[in-house]
Amino acid sequence: MPPDAQEDLAAQDLPERSPGTRRWLFADQLGPHFLDAPDQPVLLLESTDVFRRGRFHRRKAHLILSALRHRAAELGEQAVFVQAPTYREGLAACGEAVSVCDPTSYPARRFVRRLPGVEVLASRGFVVSERQFRGWAERRGGKRLLMEDFYRDVRRFHGLLMDGAEPVGGTWNYDHENRSGPPRQEKLDLAEPRWPVEDDIDAEVRADLDRWERDDGVEFTGSDGPRRFAVTRREALGVLRRFLDERLEQFGTYEDAMLAGDPWMAHSLLSAPQNLGLLDPLEIARRAEEHGRAHGVRLASVEGFVRQVVGWRSYTWHLYWHLGEGYKQRNALGSERTIPDWFGDLDADAVEANCLRHVLGQVRDEGWTHHIPRLMVLGNWGLQRGYRPAELADWFWRNFVDGYDWVMTTNVVGMSQHADGGVLATKPYVSGGAYIDRMSDFCGGCRYDPKVRVGEDACPFTAGYWNFLAGHREELEGNRRMTQALRGLDRLRDLDGVLHQEAERGDGAP
Image 1: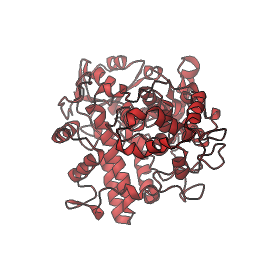
Image 2 (image 1 turned 180 degrees about the vertical axis):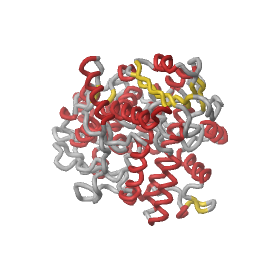
Image 3 (image 1 turned 30 degrees about the horizontal axis):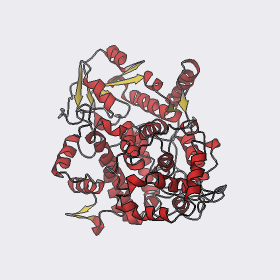
Image 4 (image 1 turned 90 degrees about the vertical axis):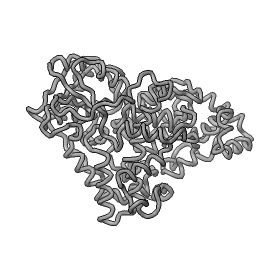
């Protein structure tokens, strides 16, 4: 554990099971694999104070409450369901000793481990345990903890997409085949996802959220609307089945592409129900592998999906604990700007740049975008503008329906903002308008030109890219992957104009 960890909350060897106790389930632990027996008594707590600790997206609040209440309804008399201002008050109302699987954030772990009458068990819901990851990291002997190495070892351990000791197809990673730009059409040739049908529980949740806003001073970001994501295991299994049948084949091909008229593309829409704990990631990966074999699905698409589910997701989870609580405050590039109101409030109407307006608008309306708009539009903008990494990570987890502190800390602080100095990513994920133009149709009809960096038509991402390189040249000069980009900086005849222009832009919406 690195020295910046304030408390050893990850390294304890906790018991695995406690079948005789009532199991307290947090709202991200709602699947059957968080119980030790199908008939184990359950405690479900709904705390209203959670939504007073900063503004969450309205859709996120709806999703969490709907999932919790649906689980209570499914379990019936097997569960005690308590609605209270705080978890402490809810536990007191229950009046029983309980067990709980280790929660998914530092504050929550610290809280439950100090509660009397609560037995804390090892965490669940990932493809290897924290103890296994710790052993894997120790065996590396000081070598970098590369995601690719972790992913390959996970596949070996579980026998996923393996042909004996070798990967199926003879290659571990087909990422090079999954980088196609969008087709020349407004949408992929796929039916729109079949959305869940809301019920009385959803109506009750919506009425409660309305009342909290109207009478109790609770504030949300974003727009409300029909529920998009699964909140029960039955719904989640249906989403998985339809993804495998209808979208997996095209998933890999257009995994990194963006279309203004097709926000969902061929993505699975499983991140939210998976992060509610409704599906086990190993279960998802095995079903994808079995479906791919049975139906001759393009191997690059199957492998790309499996890599997301058992590779990147588990890797970022374990690094969240391995790197320590202080990791979130790392700021290797010295980014100190506070997020401006237009960005924090999801005010897409204030933005003229098509790509940012569209993506910010999708977050406002849906509480979701897929990983490339997150990384290469929203994250890229935050990196160029120097937003504080920890503040941006909090913005992401509060505004995305699938966002949690463990998800966003490593993804934003490490991968997106390069604030860890290269622990997760070997170079900053920063780009100009040319990348966005290549991977999307956003630039068509935009008032800005991705090829122009100075003047009224200058693309703010293109200008921002060169401004970023110039402002962080000293930190980046030792990075061999940035050598070519920095040489390009030396060839710019209008660099002074770019720097002046971007200083004038300040924190305003582009």
